[in-house]
Length: 159
Length: 159
Length: 159
Length: 159
Ligand SMILES: [Zn+2]
Ligand SMILES: [Zn+2]
Ligand SMILES: [Zn+2]
Ligand SMILES: [Zn+2]
Image (cartoon, rainbow over all chains, first blue to last red; front, side, top):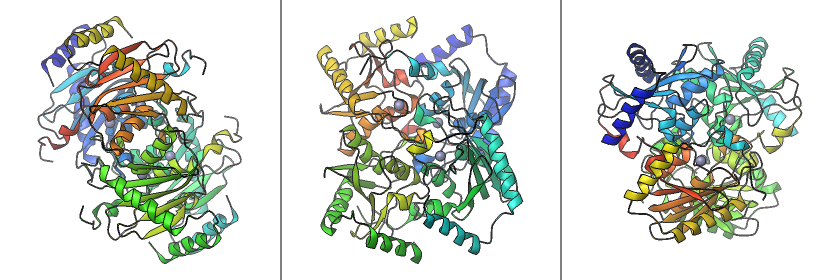
């Protein structure tokens, strides 16, 4: 994590109006940490938890679920989001991510960023440490210049 | 679906002792059909629902959740299973799958079969039609000669 | 691998007419073993190689390519197939799979079976050991009652 | 694409020393466009091509390869990279991406960004249009604050 990136985050803090209160953020991170306990990760032994806040103020949690065929596992963030969708929720305010890394903010993989982006670009992602400190970013900051649903219907050249 | 496969299913019926009662199966399929309603599938417009029965008799439902980058979607079966795992359940009796295809039993894709197999080979999968009729198969029948968790720790030749 | 499955394989041998000669099979397995050397698998340390024979008798090889986000890796079989497709080939006769497991025939995961099935159900898959012995199966045997391209256009009930 | 992002790109141009010559970039984009022709995309009908330049100046091309189970497809960029790896190359200078969208630069999905990042953060990605115009970005710009191979071995808190 370089200096420049911390600045970017700061800028967002100043200009963004949809921020959660400190209390709500801490609470969401706490729920992500608790979700981590259910992680099924016998292969990586790298537990991750996620807690997703909908615009209707429901929280859905997820953990990573791995597979002997490594590439068939699913990350915590995608579990939380698909769980919410399967319960009829697909508008989101924020998602918090938690891991066991003591010195690093756990950051969503690219696939999870794309999975988030399907449901909007300007909602918040909290990258946390076990001590509760965090970075706040938007989906758009994590996946700039993104490919998204609109691209599929754009004008095309003739083949 | 050829004759031979129907026979295989019959054989299982005769020898298998873990079968669900007709009522329970019908109920599980009903829940899979209801789960289908939440499907987020603007790309395929092919709705799928799943209902997963744990050994502790809880039911977790799932639906397909697609993505503009088609390969980042998740099937209904995997949503249901990861949802259960994230709630602390990873022993399963059966899963029912439902779609809108009127004349075909909806069958799990290979990735979902592998995802199921991570949690055992001898539990039941119900492939259903909207009219409630179904095929009953085991995970092992759907994924014979499977790669699984044990393979990762098998003896290896020296490189 | 139970007795019954060996029988199934034998049955195929008797009835199937598209079989490769023993020489061709051994050669394909040899190429799968060589492909294994390029495997990028720092996480699983489980090397897999694949060699794919097209109907025009070209061979495309693949190895597993893993990722720090485990679920973003790709298996050897899918690498070989997508490589062939990207070079204009999508009709296949057979694929051989090789690993370092000394006592087990390496078997394709469910996702690879589904990826194979996209390009037909009745072509051959060779599950091999480092000593060159193998099991011969069809895609259909590995993925019975499969979901496939036709399902997407089947009749649907009204929502 | 907002103004700010164009600025970022410009900044990179000024500070980055690994840039390709205009000729090489145009050539790489041309190869990505040609690779697009092999795309197997009966479901999205959205053709994508990629051309990957290794540090040893080899080029590997890829196209998207889709599947009836939409989530089992593979993007053009991942096909090109895994193809290179399977041929013994895993150090890359740049990748160009091409699609049929006439008015939009085609941008890699999040999964492809993560797949690229496995092999370094500071190599170049060219997002192009059919008319040959392009945006130049680094992997790091496309996937800021990324999760990567180092994270897996970081210090962890005790469970
Ligand atoms: Zn992820
Ligand atoms: Zn599936
Ligand atoms: Zn596989
Ligand atoms: Zn992609």
